[in-house]
Length: 252
Image (cartoon, rainbow, N blue to C red; front, side, top):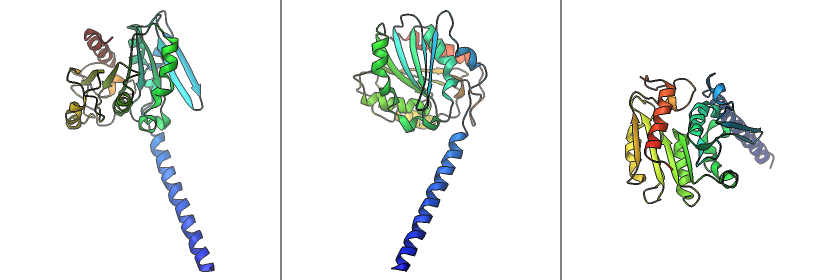
């Protein structure tokens, strides 16, 4: 009996140590993320067109960019290990073009840990912004993939999907959603083989645009991501090209 108890406690201690090591390793991995650049600070301020509202609670962090009487809405998922405030320049500019945009902070900056995050806010946003006629979810890189996963299960709640340097592993081919996919010609992070493989998951009337000289990182303001290609345009130019394309395609 003593031998059994001794063996049991040894197994218990070993299990606790393994769990502790896993948590330590994950914690170290999660803390090593891409921080927003200093110039994002300006986009986090309200101006004469866009009102910026920040919510910062222990288990809820969001930033909303809203113009007066918006006609379109976007809930945005950040890319893996990218600080959510890095997308302020992109979303502030969308707001200047008539969108109310909410960017969500993800647990450990990993959208995969809360891929249904939009569900917490979509109803309240619709109630608050009654002038909005079309609602979209979207995201950058793996955040876009998670947004697509949400979209596939909630076609009754949204009208479309924005994929920025991202692809959908969920089947949206018969979803009836308007899907807009944008990436840069110099993107070296996006797995283009997987992008092309999963394109069949998107509707046949997909709106697709490749930004000449654009890169993976310039949908946000966090510097150049490891392994990315060198851009031939500025971040501001990439953001403007993205919005110009979507607006020209009559997104909403």
